[in-house]
Length: 124
Image (spheres, rainbow, N blue to C red):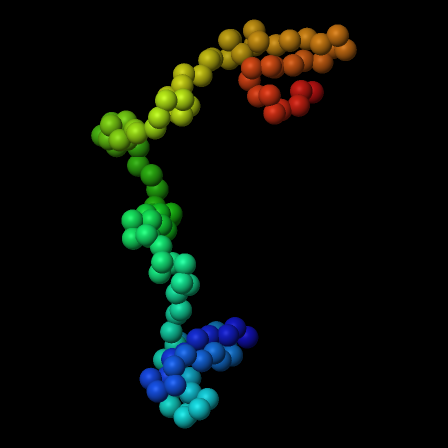
């Protein structure tokens, strides 16, 4: 059974085991027996977070299930907001396949090496 947090108006926060069916129902305070509502505690790191960062995280969390729409207006707006510095790589034009096939180096044992494409990838 999960442990839930409840708050008594007189004695403060306490923790109690409850089934998932009982999660939304009040629980009796262990000291006075008074029915206490369930509370959701927020981690101190969230409270100390900069408001702008908290807003960004909330926006991302709300939009995680929404599809991205690609319209000419949205693409133009994204291009206008592009603030990356020099060398970010997002605006680099990638060579087409014909250029890549010319960059193959054959080793003496017959293996192929692609030196400028993906240096982290092992050739077959």
